[in-house]
Length: 356
Image (cartoon, rainbow, N blue to C red; front, side):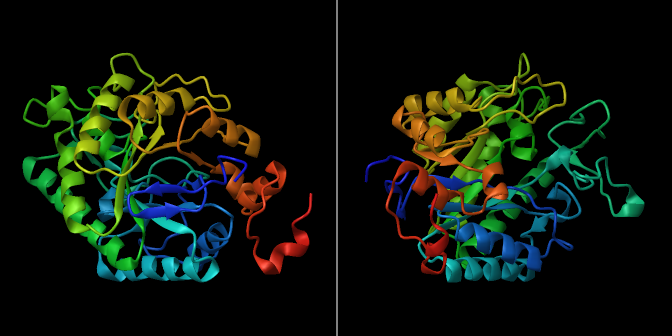
């Protein structure tokens, strides 16, 4: 291979044909947590995008773990059947594409309307009370969470484990645990959102206790899949979760058998101040990769093939998330091969269109 982008990569037992990864991107098209025709078509297209790895959007471990009322769920065997149908559709399109699914609990950032409407669901609209490590909100116009009791924390661990078991049965190759973007597990990690005085709050060791317990339980429940995490490497707020803590946390995860880390940033609180630009999150991915040795996925407005190639050549990451551009062009991977002069196995039905 002439390029890094189209060279294979190994994550545990999972061999990827290239370094292009499609990150989880919520579609807000579910009905009571259930898969719809939208998901089968959407993920079928992405399976034929030329990417080596496609991650299905966040699936909530409980009904009150959804971000919105239109999120996918994985809290029952019935819902898992829908995931299995999506996986089956994707395999039928391209059996060489590896499939991951993200599993999440939104915590205090739940009970939202779909983003193109905005605001919070009322009880009349089917909204619910949100929970979190402490009775705090994620912003001035957001509701405060109900502080979780120890029994509720134990139940969350079981819910994540049950979802992992269902995902494994549905046939995915990997699971990404969502510990980023201000959702529940990130809320426990950050001292800004976690003000607990028990064994789950205060020190770094206490704040990582629940996320590590979730990882261990999911690994036990789904031993046949590669288990990774998505982290926010910084809160972009003074006194919040930071890069050093991220690196220390990822090292601990690696020692427990974590297979990969997807490095993002932010999302904890509306007061964050981020100077967004192309590749603005790449320095965080590079630091995590260099200091942990964990197989690392980089993300953050990576737009074109040459930019993605440079991320790999410079040693910033092992895989590159292509998100927004895949929504714009679900054949981004094939286009990237043409731009970089790579000879890859285009779908025969599309060969007539594979010209610059």
